[in-house]
Image (tube, rainbow, N blue to C red; front, side, top):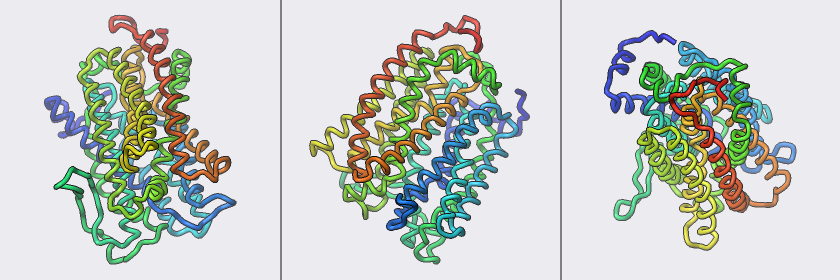
Length: 464
């Protein structure tokens, strides 16, 4: 589709590849980083002693937001795969405005009505990822761009929860970055003044809204610069296939064409999303059981190392120009991640690593397996199979099923395993997922690699 070019867009279209890549990573990273300030801060609170129909209120909040987020993913399979270029920025801003409005209701509404507010908060946010990925997919540098984007939610999840804890504690400063380095350096932190320090300790119900206020202007600025990114060039399309919105018939045809291999991937993602979300939403409780309840910047300290560990192998996929070998590389990264889940938990159970090191290892393992689904896996898969369309559709089918799994696993834990601690449940989940995912990754890799289409063959969804 022809794109109307402003000055920044025209400059980027003519810019050297390294400069374009840096610009696009920063714009996409900051956009999605800011989104997490509207989604995750509420999980920094524990809502202790509050119940709803026999369930802990925090569990109900998590499930309610997940239901909204999951529904958003199902809606996104249509909206995000059909959205036109000129509509993306408007949709991004509208979704965040709705989410922040819902957080305002979360603070205002009484009692159990807050459950509805947190559902409404999740409802628009599930489409943000797909709208941002549209700007990055189908390029020669997509691995670098998508790796940079993927790191955003790993780091942001920890930072916005640390900010939420600081707001509730009435602290004078907010932590925007924290990293444990070897002595004599020790803990390194990037701090900023708390704009709401004069309010004192913020209620756990108002904290999510005020966290969103802090990030609202940065989000708007980020979206503006993200929207300046030009469409893929002719050379991008030659190497990675043309990307365009998909009709309903094209989406169904694509699913039918690769159903066996996709089914194996979707089963893994069903449980993988549940694992990643459980660790993310109940990290405060797990760290508490591990003895880190009062540790400063604990979320940032764990997630920063995870982010560094994830971005490196994903970025190296950029060096693999052959799409078939690139797809194999994505599977190897995901398989390594699931192996780390089992290995890390074995070392922790044997007393060979600390609780923080265990959380970093299973975080790294889960994200190494999880992140390629939302970034390089389907981008390379479409290029390898020479399919015209958008990887956003495949990402959203996987996400819709994945967040359904997240809701299901959380309900199973609270209804069938209510006496098991969050820590013990996470340990057993790590072992089970390591085995299941490793087997299915191998089988699905064989399936797709035997269906690679040489670059000189006809392209299109109908080319089975």
